Image (tube, rainbow, N blue to C red):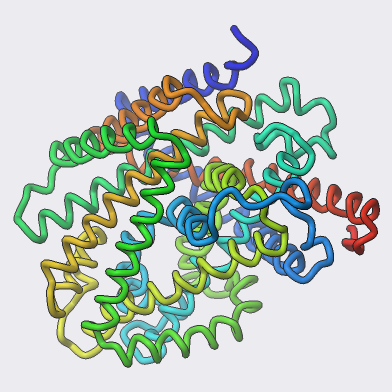
Length: 501
């Protein structure tokens, strides 16, 4: 076995066992993984809250720290991509399908189905629904991505180490990152990435099918979802073949154009004043309540404690599980950026756009239900967005635009996933061969299709959340390693110090 491909062969073998279990014993696999996930949420929820909050504080500190002047590369190096294209890439890889999938369904769920504060359908529930949605998708989520991406980019571009998760731990583990320990870390990162991307492909196919079913009465079946995945697979393989500078770059810019158009249509044709007022008010309450929400566990209120486990802890685990994929991709496209620019842009720009997105789509859904016009909360998750469109002008135009956007995000996520997996399984190569990328692309689609067919997609999502706990320990070590590296370089350059632990 070639040393270069050890991570590839071991990862494919383990994934084959997981998929086989999902096909042969889907119900048992889902039940076991659900029990493990529930146990992890109950036993380690406090740990997730503390870890993610500490990482968020470190990221915010880096924005104002003197080491923010350090560049990810040579000090005079220029960025590889323009700022608008770079932001589009961050956005497409970091959230993508999830924004469209949960844009209406999460706020309306917090408002009408299960409130974070126990109040449902009230004026206070309107405020709480957006505040907690902002919390789940805002700077805490992007801090997780930011710290992983920054550690990879800093050690790779600044210190010429391999662009792998394991390589960032050299200041702590030394040469062991080149041995069995390092390979084990990289295999684990590959597994988390595959589970995350395959789950997103499955959810993307379900939502596109849901939209077509809602609009055109197309059957909402697994066979239609297979056809959707097959079409998207051909498209993202074509994009993957064209390379990072063409395929993903073009698609990311297209995503931003479509997303901007859809957001503008919703603000213009939706309850404009309500959206803008809700956005402004929620920004204020989000900032005001951020410390309290960051450590909120509700140990004496079982219902609210269960809500926190089901939403907040779930999201923190979800973002952590996604961070190897998103972190490596963001690192790869961020060469030449200063640390200050990197953290500021990764943390704050996507967060503000996401806040406006949820205010527009979630706010419009809540406006309809709060005024008694429609019951959006009764619709399936994948249909709620299209249900909102049906009550405002140009429903066909907005719905088709949304389907195109989901498809474009779908292709971008899969394309980015194949590129990152190619890097991770070829020892950090910046130009993984098309054969490797095509192999991963077909595997990702096959895994999503197999588990959709057997109903094992929920088990796949459960396993991704389970994988978050051990990877969170790796992420904590990456953070310590990054702080240690920055402290040492700050001393060498005489540009200030980071206070150590």
